[in-house]
Image: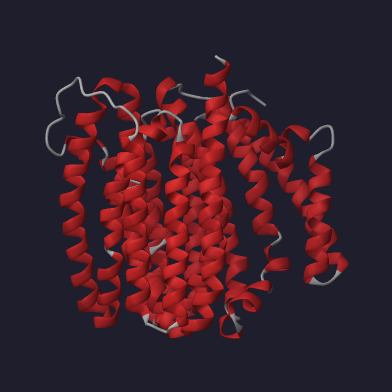
Length: 469
């Protein structure tokens, strides 16, 4: 029993460590690429990455929750389920690779098409990575950490060499693609070390993809708001206009690794128990709200650091960071609710929420981008995220919404007090240095200690949110 109770925490720490590895890679490559490529080439590279990333959930992230749930519920059918799913995803990945390459050639030029063709290798890598899911289903993400670490180190080395030698966008894209493929092969090799059951017939062709359609739609809708916004901005205003937006967005997206690690660790238990409401969800949402909302509220204090890191040509990233940080706060709230609803079989509800948010984003982004450029795109993304969070809370049930709203109100009061004192203190660095300690001190008071992010992180590291607040 003690081991079973510790497994979610161990798995969460392994997933979080993998996130730290990705964070280190992005932290190393971000300033290097912005300074070596400049606005135009960096905008082209990030637009190509965004275009490929928009379709990657259809063969990767969109399949993973449903496949993990199927493995947990039917442990005797692991091998046939994996074989059938990887076979179907391979055909789908090849079709998508060809489709987006041709589309990039027709609408964005030959240079973009070359970059997209090189990055399309990541679609194959996502299919290969599915072989490691038995380890995740058994809460043994720690055994995949070594494979991820090797892949990330090779990616940093290859991209850094190509950037220093000024090999161009195509060479950089190829380095990203091949490093991702190697990482997928290493993950698949780690997955093969686990004996998986093969005592059931294989599901019908395309059956798992059919079951995963809601999850794939959810992931695609998320990608439209998170990845396709850069592509849309590049189409309407050019790659140079998209570069500062992409730089600000990618810096903020690094923080999303925290909610993803927590949500990934809770998915197997949500899928196995299938309760209509769960106090662990409330605990996870309030924990992430205590981290995400300060990230947004204190953005004016740290946004000016970005041009210093990325280069003076990216000075437009600072005001965009202040806007996009609020979308990140919404994503902190949405991630655990997404995971809970998907784990309890309510994928269609999640699809409705994300679909509405995607439609709202497209309808708002087109006129706002034409009128205001990158700030208009950022404003559309924030409004779409607010609508998505509102709908997700509605579908999570009244028993979940009431304590979350009460906790958010208390968090908001502490953040406003800390932000006001930081602004009163003066400069950005001084304001940040004052606001953060004040906020953490307020959250450690007796009445609010249960909402303290520090206390919640300690509790989560110990038991994976298994105990109620």
